[in-house]
Amino acid sequence: MQSFNIVLATLVAYLIGSLSFAVIVSRLMGLRDPRTYGSNNPGATNVLRSGNKVAALLTLLLDAVKGYLPTLWAVHYGGPLGIGEGGAALVGLAAFVGHLFPVFFRFQGGKGVATAAGVLLGLDPWLGLGTLATWVIIAVFFRYSSLASLVAAVFAPFFQLLGWGAGPVLGAVIVMSMLLVWRHAANIRKLIEGKESKIGQKAAAPAAAAASTAVHPHAKPHAKSHTRKGR
Image (tube, rainbow, N blue to C red; front, top):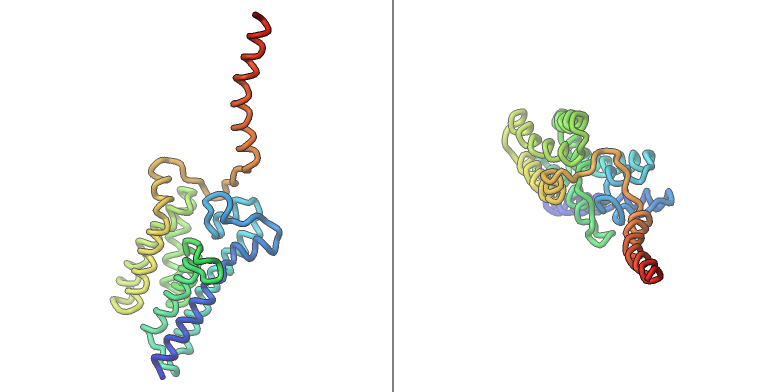
């Protein structure tokens, strides 16, 4: 029975994590699909590139909440159902994986930064706050959300190990950190090449980009026609 409860809680957490709030909020507010501009990532940072700060804030909060609530429930109320520390860590990991590979959105999810933060806060408030503080410090100084996320992902397992030692929670945090780094592979390349977008930088309008590229091909034929008339 205990195993069934753990499996059920894990499945429910995954389904909750599969709610891609970047897409949902954008649709409700009449904005473009965040998977079609900027980094093409359905996350709060990319929604911010639409210029709508309210939509970005809602996405950030809801993505964090969907990781926080299932994990918090498992930690504080899962005990009588046989969901111990390991089960709670699994529930949190499932919510995070749901954000990365959402069943409701063809398994095309985000990078999981806000959801991971929610999971860490649910597992232990101090672990979550320490990791969030790391993100904020890097983001304020360097203005790169991806760099802040990568640094926070690297530090999170060390915070857990130094503060609470090894155990199932550490295993879940390591897996989340590895997945976060993997999901940021393209951002790592852009950071190295100096092409990464900074926080708040708006996405370029596709129509304007297409118009600028369309101007130059017609310039040469036009010049040639004047040359022939001169002859």
